[in-house]
Amino acid sequence: MRLLTGKPGWSTSADVVVIGSGVAGLTTALNLRSHGLSVLLVTKARIDEGSTKWAQGGIAAALGPGDTPDQHKKDTLIAGAGLCDSKAVDVLVSEGPEAVRKLIAQGAVFDKSETGEIALTREGGHLRDRILHAGGDATGAEVSRALLTAVKSDKGIEIIEHALAIDALKSKTGRVCGVLLHVIGAGSRDGVGSALARAVVVATGGLGQVYSQTTNPAVSTGDGVALALRAGAKVADVEFIQFHPTVLWRDLANRGQQPLISEAVRGEGAILLNHKNEQFMVGKHPQADLAPRDVVSKEIFNQMQQSGQPFVWLDATRVKDFQSRFPTIYASCKANGIDPLKEKIPVAPASHYASGGVKVDLNGQSSVAGLYICGESACTGAHGANRLASNSLLEGLVFGTRIAAALAKQLPAQEEPVYESKTTLLDPKIVLPLQISMSEGAGVMRSESSLRKTLQTLNELSKLTSTEPQIESWEASNLHLLATAIVQSALIRKESRGSHWRSDYPQSSDSWLSRITTEIDESGNWKSDLEPIQ
Image 1 (spheres, rainbow, N blue to C red):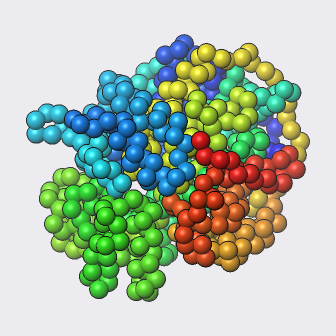
Image 2 (tube, rainbow, N blue to C red):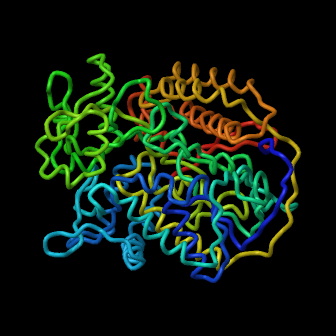
Image 3 (tube, rainbow, N blue to C red):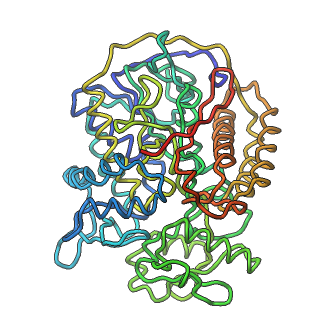
């Protein structure tokens, strides 16, 4: 099954196609080049757009005195609420420090302490200072800058910007051997074409635009995960959508990407207050305001329910050197009429990160031959039910390196694609009602009734088809596919765990210490299974 497109009007090829220009895609591309493989790097907007550059938090790695990968692992496992794959966490925390050192060698500049050492800070869920930051709250932008500088100087990496990856191309053997792309305004490559490769790496980031309010940029419509699903790949843990607890609240009319107020602000002493001016996180968790994100998001939701107000307050007026420590956040607050040095900031949870994604092994291989997934699009099992703060950039660095090494060892000859005839396409008009339904029924808090209502809405929206292949229709179709996968899995998991909170099943249960995997067959039928945690 694939999306409806026009006939490919052009073709190109490389050893490996990498889709996405965030930390995962750029790291994978650079490491593929170090093994002598040619790379076609495809990105949906400009190469410097995407979620990585918006990351205000840092990179977590056991680099400080007295810290160890084992301590980092323990914190990761606690945040993951029993669903982490232990081997994946071992890989993440043990290979993480070297991956960060390599990033520094590539030119990334991180904040230094007064003694000249890299300054390590703490964020929610971490029991040690192990977070590297750059430019205070601009870590993602610096990581992106350093990697992009290296990519742009490598003549073995061909870059195609403004290109939406529509569907995987498969050979007669069922192996992925390229992708269908739609390129806007690229001369002879205008429109739909085929990019052939011996393997395809999906690193398209998140799917935050499934919800009406998100920290993700507009390009985060989950295209890579949807592409993999249609290619027959399994997804896992997709019910675990992490909501960032402190996103600047403006008003309900503001949809799409919202300004993020990093956890690091609370790490520097900011406190959450309800409308009675009470510090409500005290007594709710040993780490209070620095509890894991799911705990804080749930409690903010509770406070909002009790007060009837759509936000709570974040008081950062006592944070030392706020303006220089958090220049990006200061600027976004001021742009929205708030002076964080003098007044409290209204905040509310918003969709932030997908802990699940396409199920992969420790080398990023999906359940479909030739298709590899890295970064937020992947489910390595390292995050479990809730990603630990600042483990996301690290995951892109570590697993991008591993994918490249695996492909260098076993990359088969190019196979010819077979173009499928069964197509589907939905009308762009479904996007707004889909986002509203997902936020209301499958957001921070879910229940059987709210999820059933959302699924009914999704079923009704699926009848609004389109015969006009265009970016808006492809994105709408991708969002619908992913929303359906999230709701299906959330209905199956009858417990509350990590970033999945069911009001009708408020407790976690050992009987649910399993990973829910989901796939669709060639006819579009859904199939879900429970797999025991490794």
